[in-house]
Length: 211
Image 1 (cartoon, one colour):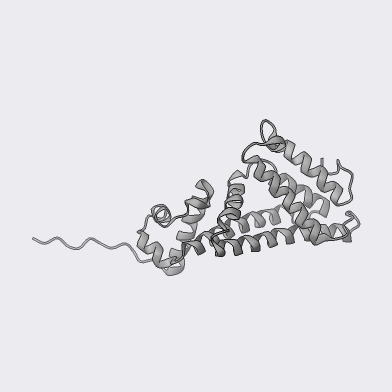
Image 2 (cartoon, rainbow, N blue to C red; image 1 turned 90 degrees about the vertical axis):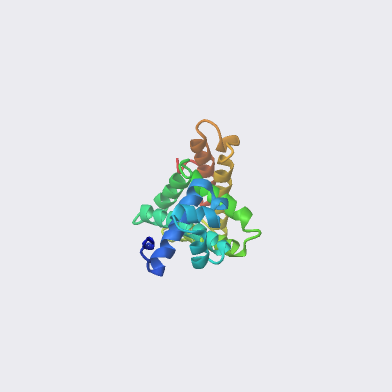
């Protein structure tokens, strides 16, 4: 006697399936880094076949780029929620506290890997540039608001925002290998103190303005 054919899984709408694939890639990246976002790994995480992933994501480079953008956009959105309604000085303090409290190593790893992998993955490189522009815009808006209200003294807000972003990125990257003031016991507090003093000076405030 022949057996009846095995029931097939429910076919999901393309938008739903694409969202599931992106979520699988996002969770993989946060747990294991962007390099872990491979065709087979994403398929295993999403509980589908590699062929289905390839159907929806014919370019893994593009999926890695979208994964990176999704993670960073969420971080920027969180900062926006935390700083809504605050004065510029408090906004900048919240940015420092949030990015330098030592709890975001997973996102820091994503950034460091993206800078490296982007050398050979142009969609990722373009996404990195876009997200760095977005972060610069966040900081620039805070600086310009501070200047407008008389709290900050900044001659070139875009350039200063770029400088602040580089300073924060540098210290958070160093924290991954626990180097110098960015590593060891009390690393987060040490990094924050150094960066806070520098940023206070850049915006025309006393070195201890941000604690």
